[in-house]
Length: 508
Image (cartoon, rainbow, N blue to C red; front, side, top):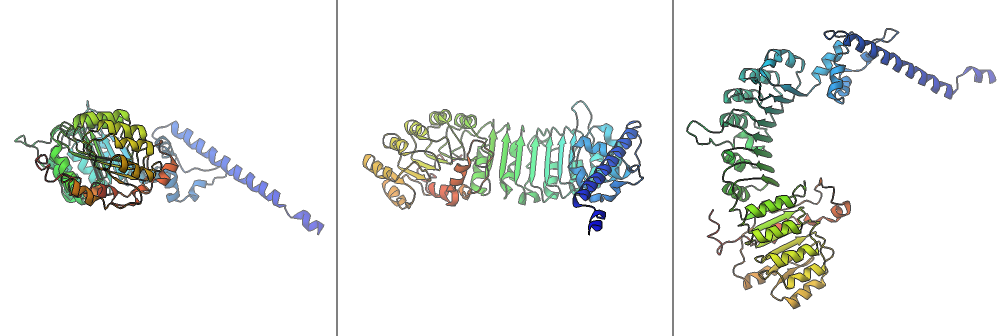
């Protein structure tokens, strides 16, 4: 027994031996990489031979190409370039596994395009940028790229001024799997964009910035869209355009549109925004910045629950540029006394206001609204940290207020409803657990209360919606299941849209 025991290695010795072998292998591998890299750095045109350790064995040959490609994809761009120079196999695998490519799109790169896209034959995301002082690649080069990258999903064009409508049309015919197009400071126009929309039926996002050729020979903007892509488009971004209204058919016809961004675009936007509000039922985010117009805008619904990037600056801009605003819905937006005061003084026709999930709406803000929003007739508050103290201001403020709904506000008790009935008997108060049967009372006592339903776009169901805001606390989100009542805001604004009495104002 003793001899057998002495001749067998102990478990601890096996572990030490295994660690020693692995350490030795790592040293061989590191030494071989260093040797290969030193030889490559001495000659820029040399592609090294496979890595070999001191015993002559290439340990990297045990790594399948697929695993090697995964490793390359997790490396920064600079490291990928260095690894591609280690040996011929790494050079090939790195090129075939690269899906994202950014090129200087000057005319000087055109002779190298066949070689580049022979190596990078799996590119799905391509960025072509050209300096304004250089001539860019043209239609022929873009055609070559489209033939080599048939599975291209994303294309970004910046400063490619030599591209024409004809070149974009050929590209669209060859790359029909395109999902996203972003173009800026280019010279092609409506015909090229219409070709993209017609041939790339799966397009989900389009961004257009400073496109100079949106006029035809007669000087009138050519309509863009909707095309086949209207069935799949989810995001439209228009920036710094002279004739952004030519995108109206695309915006209106995009049935699945969720996000619309219009930044620094000239022209009259009132009619388009009204039409979008009436017809689009899927739109959840609208970003407007420095628009010329919108002074006739009467209804504005802002959903900041997902992004929470709209603050006082944006609301003050709305107050200054939309003096005829009559209905305002703020969801997940946190206005302060500054922006509320601006809205009260500039939007003197504001009659309907909804504040949902606004952490900044407290008693002080309610007092401010009650004192300054003199035309307000309907008020909806949900998921805001207000209390009975703020609610008491409703008894003396809001000279025209006829109805208020308060839901999911934990600081508000059921006693306040009775208190308000005693001190302001004409006010209809709806709290948690109460039905909206009082609508009939409001209509009997107020013939001016409208009866039209708000569009279905105002229906909200954001129980689990994420937020990028760092200010909203987790406990607040957990108790903010306030939108489980799917049609809360729609029901709140039921009969709030003016019909008979405001018919003249509805003519835009």
